[in-house]
Amino acid sequence: MDIKRMAFDMKDKLIEMRRHFHTIPEIAFEEIETSSFVAETLSELEIDVKTGIAKTGVVGVLKGSGEKTIALRADMDALPITEENDVDYKSKHKGTMHACGHDAHMSMLLGAAMILSEMKDEVQGKVRFIFQPSEESLPGGAKTMIKEGVLDSVDAIFGIHVDPTLETGKIGYKSGPFFAFTSEFTILLHGKGGHAAIPDLSIDPIVMASDVIQELQMISSRWMSPLEPVIVTIGSIHGGTNFNIIPESIELKGTLRLMNMDLVDEAVGKIEGILKGITGIYGGSYQFDFVKGYPVLLNDRAFTQFVSGVVKDFFGDEHAVELEQPLMGGEDFAYYLDKVPGAFVRLGTGNRGKKTTFPWHHSRFNIDEDALPYGTALFVKCSVEYLKNS
Image (cartoon, rainbow, N blue to C red; front, side):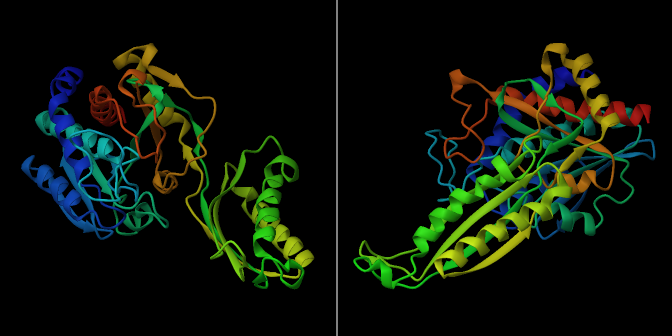
């Protein structure tokens, strides 16, 4: 069957599904309406469906003629962001938005299920469709789904993430490290409150916080190898109540990102050293809560070469983009790749004319829907070729 033609012929259906998901964004482990739509669609295709995995996860299995199994994964959760796009499929859920493309991932994977169910006789093995909750929030849904057996008897896994930095239809790939180790940390700086006019009788946690934030930037610029990607970002700072009051404490929230798991403890030690030093100088104190997130995502070399070959043969060399640098964002697809060989690729959805180049997690994030058939076709072609040749 002509997989490419089938994928592009169903473009309107892919857009319809994607826009449906976009209007009903649901955050981590609350993807009730979303998972229900997924399960119903898979059932209509006469694909074996199991629901309630990791609370809201859905898994479908298409059984072809062979014993090998390839898994395909899409994430389902949205983000706590108020959408600013002026489109008729704008989020109906106030303060929640699909600002990372998971609506597109689900649409493309359901499209792949539709095509594969039509060509079931040509599928020389099994295809497992994994619709995962909670990719955006630690500890992530992948870990729980793995514990509940979604990778049992799976021989390989493949996933796609939309990318507004790549031109529509381009497919970015890279073997080895592809996404970063992630973390979340909270710092509470305790001082001594008082009147703004007599700061010498107080211990100002706001000043301490400013020193801490500046010094944290020295970790990547001066205290660790410049050859190792390291990011320390403070994304939230809260404290104080009025213009003339020195508060008792300040709260900072941030993230540490690395591409080398061996450096995590060293970097955390640097953060703690900064906190001890600065609070010691001021006579204050601190609390530091560090939560490890997803590990570095490592694409299997052989499977990545297989995927890049499929892209070149199927779409043409001009669609295959070998990426030199990894992305410092995190992805709990890393947990799947820690268990079975596979690869994760980035599908270009960037189109300046359509204003789809806003970054992930932006309130105006959107995709060029012309990319959807590329992702669906790639899911199908990789599945068929892997099962045929493994």
